[in-house]
Length: 124
Image 1 (spheres, rainbow, N blue to C red):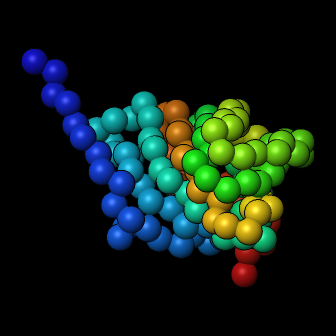
Image 2: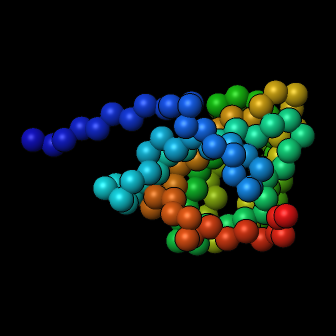
């Protein structure tokens, strides 16, 4: 019989990244290499670091707020219910253009691994 796992979004495990956003890891384990799922939160007026993910495709799905996803230097207006696919190795960032937090899901295939993250700016 197939084992089914249930994952719970635990907001007490939210952490701030150097990328200028907060993350809650929902699904990301070596037991499931094919996909990871995280919830991201970006404060009003903030733009995340320009970065890319080697060997990992990513989908942003907007839960609340509004912003601009910058993917390969193209600006895409994003609001609740919108999704965008970000190909492997492509520069990306997202800006919160609203007055409330921009909250979105990050679905990565294969799963997100820190060693695949490349920061394209000098964060201090």
